[in-house]
Image 1 (cartoon, rainbow, N blue to C red):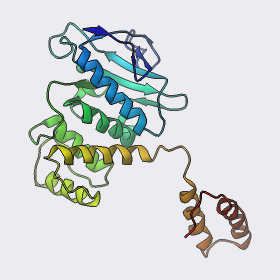
Image 2 (image 1 turned 60 degrees about the vertical axis):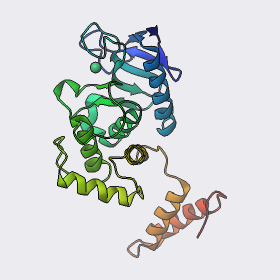
Image 3 (image 1 turned 120 degrees about the vertical axis):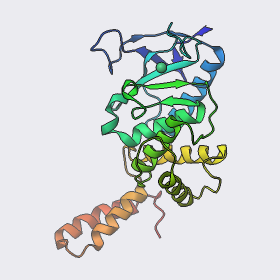
Image 4 (image 1 turned 180 degrees about the horizontal axis):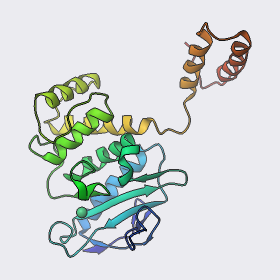
Length: 257
Ligand SMILES: [Zn+2]
């Protein structure tokens, strides 16, 4: 067992000291865990902060790592993640209903590194944190309720292919994931590790995409072009749009046509 108080350089904070401290910056935290588990956490959070457009947060909020409860926590191979705090954005697991895409993007990266991730829809006790442990491998398993639930949540809320979220693998889920894999140009099935991990990458990318603070110049260009081409605009409105359109075009990063 080894102690650690940061992951990818970001400080860990314990936000469960009092009943009202959940979701706040809490207090510094330095738990014990198995050394190999800490290394896996380092790799996982490093990837998470690389993929997330917001980059590294200021704090990682946790409900605990090593605890005397029987199970993976006692073995030093589990951690409970409550949230992540940036300067102008807070990700709090209990707020899943209001930030589903972001939540499922985080969930996807966690699953690439840990075989057990229990989330908001797994059961009531996990609505306010992700339980993460390495007791099983990171391949997909149709008999794993937690993995099937995560897949169904991603299909429904990230990939616009709604299915019943019940944790049971059936024809509806099977058809939906195959359609989405085809759309994503992923040729391996989700039952193969490579297919599952490619799907998780795509889920993270798509889930995080909406948070990008500023639209790209290409996006601005197409938004303006659409607006200018809209015949219902008044002449003065068109002139105003043309002015900002030209300002965008004059920027050398825009690749016109
Ligand atoms: Zn836990």
